[in-house]
Image (cartoon, rainbow, N blue to C red):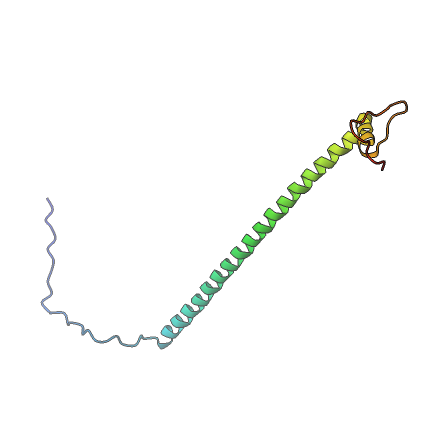
Length: 123
């Protein structure tokens, strides 16, 4: 078995270091550069937060505009569908005859209308 190593003690005592107030750093410009770097980083962070908030506000406004435009598009699409249905119905001669009888008081030759009350004034 191998014996454990035994620590060797110096016979000479080590000098104790004095704890004094922090002395100025060996490089006097280091503290100034650190302060300048911190100011720069604070300004950059402030700009980044401002940009984020500004873009978030613009994005929410664009979302509102998009929702409005989609609603308008849905209304226009419904009106278009209604118009297309009306056009298809106007291609039917039976429907045209119904409109002519009801709105304009026009009848086919030999056709006699029956009125339960007084006839409407001719338009």
